[in-house]
Length: 317
Image (tube, rainbow, N blue to C red):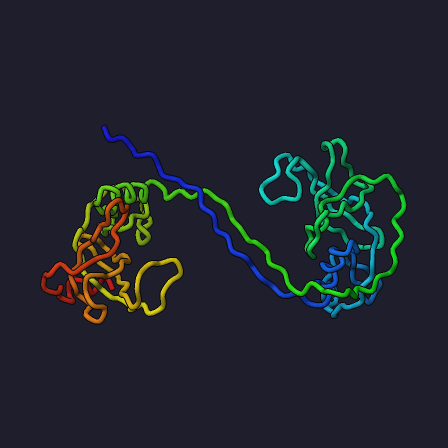
């Protein structure tokens, strides 16, 4: 009886800082938040948009007429967040709310600090709770909080001019997810740990896919028959890399190649070592080199065999 190996999975994080400059409207809006002033922009027909935009979403006219609105407002709709995630405004359950600030014609999305969903309703009055430390970002509004005043706060009519303007922001983009390679590639990875390379054969066209994909992309049928390939193979084509990659401890120039392992129906990628870069060629016979504790070949080196005849690998280019 064959026992199926447990399918692998692992948490992965993709993140990068996204830096952008600000135009005059967004610059004034974020600088205003730093100074505890909420600014909108007035359209030609008299509507006040908060958050402000640089172009009228209806007419596409350029907008520059900044106007101050109150830090109080009315909830127009809401949803309760039972389990806050990393990076959200509050670390205890809260409501996501759309708030139409007094003096504005559109609603601003932010968090509302409330004891529970029963304490939140459409039409409730709220006000801005300012962050203790402000830098010119939407997070300068820590959240909204319930407010029992029926009328809006007085505003001074700020014109959006400040002594030190915020001209750019850095947004930390991040995606957390769990990746699973699936049944076929789990078997492939587990075999690599044993210094073996396995693919799967299509029951229809008989092509052996390495790495296996679980199905034949040509015939559209599932693959299950495992086939051990290699370890030797043939360089089908290659490129010379002259730019050093960040965090990659490999001296340039080096060669990255497509290698058709013996018995495989298509070529895979691998670095060529153990030979001067300018001596690598199509048809070169190579074998994998494993490092101590490595879970995959570190690189491929020449076997010393005669070069393969072009006819034997031309369909794998």
